[in-house]
Amino acid sequence: MMNRLALARDLSGSAAVPGIETSVYGIAAVCDPLGALYLPDAGLLVVSDLHLEKGAAFARRGMMLPPYDTLATLTVLAAVMSRYDPKLVVSLGDNFHDRIGSAHLPENFRALIVGMARGREWLWINGNHDPDGVVDLPGACADEMHYAGLTFRHEPKGGLQSGEIAGHLHPSATVRRRERSIRRPCFATDGARLLMPAFGVMSGGLDLGHQAMKGLFDTSSLVAHLLGRDRIYSVRYGNLRG
Image: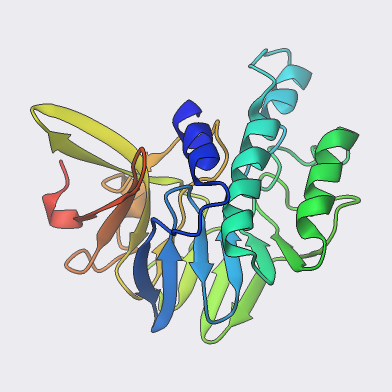
């Protein structure tokens, strides 16, 4: 969490974009080290799995977590939005950690989202944690969005899919460096579909070698764009630690 917050502060106001250019089904995109995807031709910023109010959701169940996750996630989101100034923001589901998270969102956090949404469109894709959408927040809710041959949804469909950008699985990858292993969240893409890393600062990750990932990609073309401390590191699937 601290690495992403520190990077967000370092990059705030910077004109330089330290991301990696890629394409999904022929559409140009930039993978940002803060965990967002930007489609420059559409002015479209994509984030996934914010899991806002996760600490509050656990507290309602009697399990205490540090209560700073929402502020930290929104701070990182504000930083990436200030750099790209998108026309449209699409949040790919599990926007809140449970069904009532948005209804119980403290007013100071609600005001932060209202400020970020001012002057732009915002679409909340419904996820498995928040299938009923959001309450009293700017923008619209939907199960999917379609643009230029791309489909934006929360949970990836099984098998190979062309033009899908999804979240849900929180992809991560492990590489070996100087005799030690490093595991990081990542964008995962074979050029036809792309899975987004979780944007929420308290969200874990699922390794690309996990059974849930089987059959989703052409592994001969699969690349993991790992979120590093200050940049994206791109590693082919065959070079990842098994």
